[in-house]
Length: 404
Ligand SMILES: Cc1ncc(COP(=O)(O)O)c(C=O)c1O
Image (tube, rainbow, N blue to C red; front, side, top):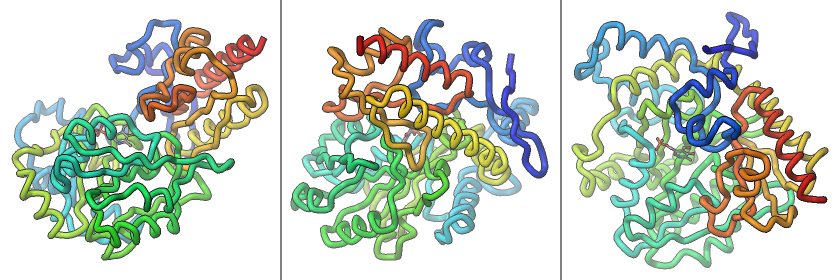
């Protein structure tokens, strides 16, 4: 049974979204079913929260009316509606003006990434990827025979940064794409205007296309600001393909609705020369209606979730600093993901295996984000406080045991 545990008052309503462990285990998602009942899962990027009421209502309406046909919403095709609501959201949040005609909805974002790589490069061409990074990006680059050029995110003592000099050395004449993930998964960096501008200028000089995954852009903490890469200026937009969806911030990844936004018509035409629109399909009706509801009606829910995530992030930071300082961690500037460096624990196995065996926690394994990161794990802290406290207590217990 769903049991909201944590309520946050807004000016208009009380928003409850935390779920008990019993309710979570009763679900049929990958996160809570991959392991047995003694393991606390903290891996895949789902939040352990119930969705906002307008999203639920949008889906219930489809089911209630058994309305499963090709969609038209108030005279508008569902894909077009998603494109228009997205364009309005970008204008109001970031002052980024783009035409809905340049927005192509589809089922999922990794599909859009892979299609963009195919459209803007040829076999053997270089694609730059900051590492560590979201594992399907590595797979997408490798599976279509492009060369993965790894640009390391280096720990400067306070956060993870990339180095423009290293980038200059990495990029050769046969490099076509910079695959940007901002906010970055798994380090949680939200790149600054200066960092993005330097990257953009470099892309202009070397004639690179920037494929910019901004799926985590709503999940940014106070003191930081998401800047859509294409909003930096027309010369950057002309080489930027933005990929995003409502699925991370509104917790609806199973509904399959994402989009590609082309910076210019020319880019869209180049894309379609290689990738016919019949191949990218379209979003399904539940995903499209849920996305429109999320972007137009669910901001109070997201604000409440962000308050909770901020508390959770700070709890991870403070508890680890006090009780397990060997685990190195920079509080993410965005996302609900914590990238934990466990190399000082001196483990004889991967950090993932250690915590699975000795703490019964299912983290994401560091080596899936970068083969060199066996001593890292990624923690998803988008859960209720009792579950998060249990995860932290188990980590501390296993770490102390290991130190003996
Ligand atoms: C950076 C990033 N991009 C894309 C995705 C997945 O998008 P989709 O499920 O639409 O392919 C994720 C999921 O965690 C992600 O973290």
